[in-house]
Length: 478
Image 1 (cartoon, rainbow, N blue to C red):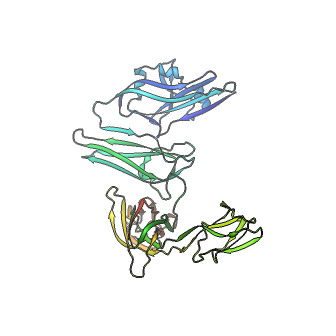
Image 2: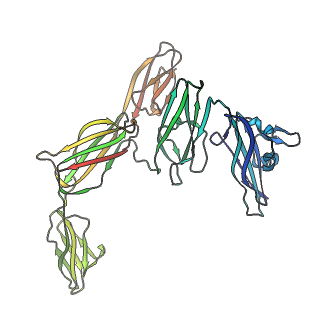
Image 3: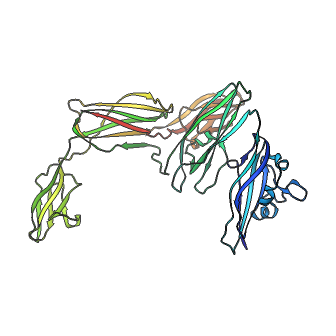
């Protein structure tokens, strides 16, 4: 008995030789220890699977086109057979996309495992290129064994005088399976496309050498690093840490960087209060061996946290006493003669948030996809001031319903209409009833084919796309 495996390339992992004018050699980095075997079959441009017939010295279709590990092990070529091929026998691959299937086996009597590290074609490209394909490396999106959300992809390119840049992307899931290459915009979906890794391929064409040009400068991907969605439909809140200042604060300027997402709203609030007082080592008395109750020296606005009780300087477990922040009473049982002390906070007040005033919104100087919202706070005579401050930013996804919105008049051919809001696809209703339609979720475009002269209208529920905070910064002033 033996164990077998079959591995095949797809559009994301195929070998692209379209720019090669000749192929002169083949190299295979692999290991086939004793008791193992590996065989290969190849395909041009997604055509039939073939192997080299060493008897008739020609490439021929393998008998089994629905490949299995056993069929490739029986009908495929060995590594030695492929490496022995001459430039003449390999030149057929020039100008094509090559897919490869590899079958491997190991006997049950060996612990050795065969492996394939790489397969490469050697050759030359055309002297004058009008088309070039550039492939990037695999980009890991997370260290977790999970798929995470792809939030945005930005391509910086330049196309001159008919030159074109087409950017494709392929994703890998947490199980290690690669999807086929698609236009990168197809991955910008709602709900978001999920992946563990991604790689990009750019196809550049310049039909008129010396005049046209195609340049790709960068591809930037924005994604989560975990699989926890911060927001769903509704309201999201971001609360900063609490800051302690030496002097009381009465003014603040807040900057919030975020994408510009239609039908979303960002508001900001600030909480300022006086600094509480901390007491350390207050003497409550001396232990008697019986239950005792002592009252703290300061009982106004006691904090429920950060209370600690000590017997002869040794902090006690909360199970050994009771503490009431309402009246400052502490009940305990300490051995006779033991010194009892306490640490606590008083003068503690709850945070009261008040609105900050929206100043203006600026385009971000570094990223055209982001804006900087500015908010101000200036304390009036009766407004909060204090040396303890925190800021809260609220992101609201608005929702609504559109009923009977008139889009236009049918022409008998397909028309595209940009909807005013991000529709929930499952709620869309289009009239007239005989119209056919398709909704492009990533662009909010409704494609409708309606009879000539028929009034086209649409009804739907909508919800704004998810917004998020790129960064926040706040300047506090006295």
